Every structure is written in C-alpha cells, then in structure tokens.
Length: 142
Image 1 (tube, helix red, strand yellow):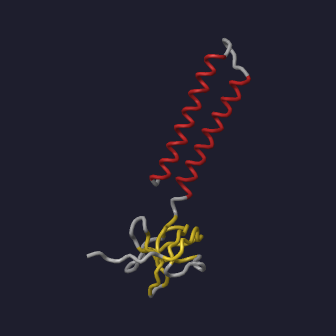
Image 2 (cartoon, helix red, strand yellow; image 1 turned 180 degrees about the vertical axis):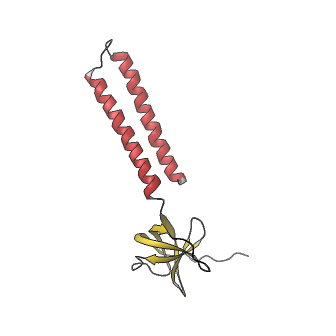
Image 3 (cartoon, one colour; image 1 turned 90 degrees about the vertical axis):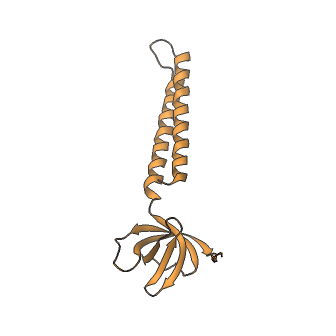
C-alpha cells in the first residue's frame, strides 16, 4: 500500500474509533438501566455505517489503485515504452495504447506481465487514466 493511501486509511480508522467511543460514553451517561434509547440506537447505526464506509474506502484504495504506472512515454524500436517514476523501471506498453503518444507523461492502469528475456518488462494497458502533458526534459548535472 502506498504511503498516501496509508494516511487516508489511518484517518478513517481514527475517525471511526472516535465515533464509537463517543457513542459508548453517551450511551452510558443517558441510557436508563437495562435499555437503549432511540437516540443511542441512531448513533450506533451511524457509527457502524461510518466504519463500514471506512473499510470500503480502504479496500478500494488498497486493491484498485495498486495497478497503475506514472511516467514518461518514449518511442523505441519495439514500440512505446514507459519510464516509470515510481520504481525507475522501463516497461514496454501493450494493449490499449491508442491515445498514448511518445513525449507525454501519463498514468496508465493495467497489469504487469511476465518479464520477457532481453527486453523491458511488459505492461498490459487497460486504460489511460490521465495525460499530464509533455514530459519535462531532465538534464544531467555535472
């Protein structure tokens, strides 16, 4: 899981825990002995819904966003390749690459394929998630 996703999941978990502790404290102070008031039942329902939403968002970010690459597209003899900003690897792009042009920085969603001997690892593009425009030229410093 990426650091940004961990922060979101941590915030949602903290909010859910705070909601459940305030519901428990309120329930203990205003509940008649042996019963639950209607307001307490509503707050318990709200807490359960918030926790469920937090778990859903966490699962979505953990699994859905793990299969994307972000980097600059270059043209090579074998076709288009993407130099990933995350792991500094080069991937040969295959699949739905119709809207991708060399020289652009893009985010693509899909699957990493098995390494083929002698060339870069392939990435099967399922969707062009975002086109950031032209890549910035990086110059070597001496």
